[in-house]
Length: 233
Image 1 (tube, rainbow, N blue to C red):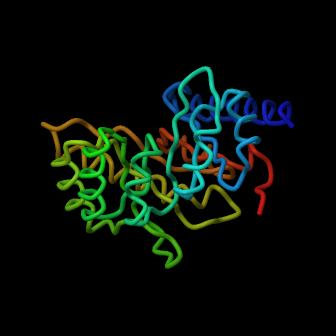
Image 2 (image 1 turned 30 degrees about the vertical axis):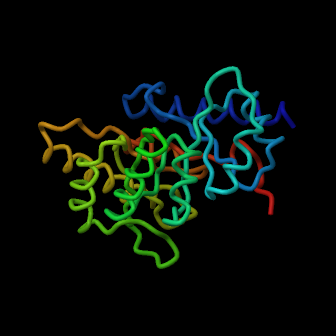
């Protein structure tokens, strides 16, 4: 199993490098997040041993239980890529280094207060709802400006960019407009904040479409099954 994870991880990295080259970018500018949700800590440890040091989890409690069990020679970064309920905000701040799914000013203020209490400075991204699917979370584009203003006033959060979870299509090419739109939103925000730190992160793309996402500017891709294998129930 370790060898298979090692081989799959190497193959994904190769595909990332090829997509980056096509886009005139450097593969080193793209963070590969290995999505380990539903996998037991023993399998997550195998992925870490294979060199996966950025781990993505959907559920706060699940990650909090796994994290203490993982041993690594280098620092492991934990990324929250699932919806964050406000009642789990404290545990999320304690557990995660990067929170991809901030979607409201109220949640930003809560996370900022808790991060101050915990003496933590997590990186946060705003999840933008581009697909308008009722089963998925995210901020509406029209609310983005207000959330950004709130985040710029937060002392304990490192606001770095945007994330999206578009609709699923079998053909990855159909996802390109969503990725292109998220990049356009980031560029628009940066034009509006010349005196503030520029936003640099675009979290978009998963196992079946990360190459298209990279071609459209992704700096973080969230890859699960292509590395870990079929997800366990």
